[in-house]
Image 1 (cartoon, rainbow, N blue to C red):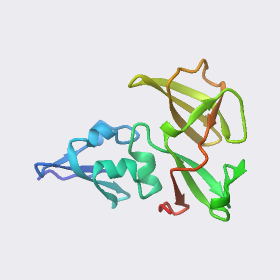
Image 2: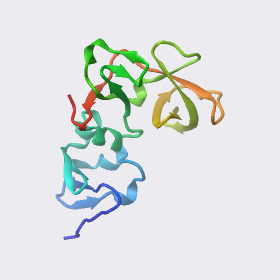
Image 3: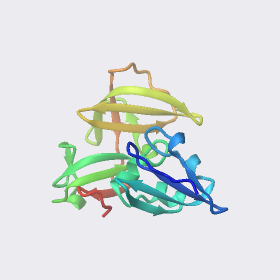
Length: 182
């Protein structure tokens, strides 16, 4: 049996339906694409030499139980926005998260782009836009925060322009500062 080791990246082992193991490190850069796991019926995501999550590929993508899994699997992976005492990225509060700190998860397909800033937008610097299955993946960065949205229309932006990410009312999930899902 082939031995799997990794010192630089978390290790993914997918148990294929025939029971053999497949090392997916050569198929990913920053994360695991859903299609890379589509051939398996279960997978283990290792982080720091320990199993971070074990389950079906669908569960890894749709129901991540840790912040690490949320930001590692999926194309693109989920967005995590810092929350401190119920306040999102030092901008607005959420009564349901009052007093809690950690990260709110928003899926890229839940975000929209707005023409101007508003109460539920985060303004970042436009970094890139890439075509993806008939839609566009738009990424912005600012002060260590990186957000990606999947949108229907290519925005008329150049690198460095401000881009306003409109967030839905409720996050898809919330992770504590220790990384566990609440």
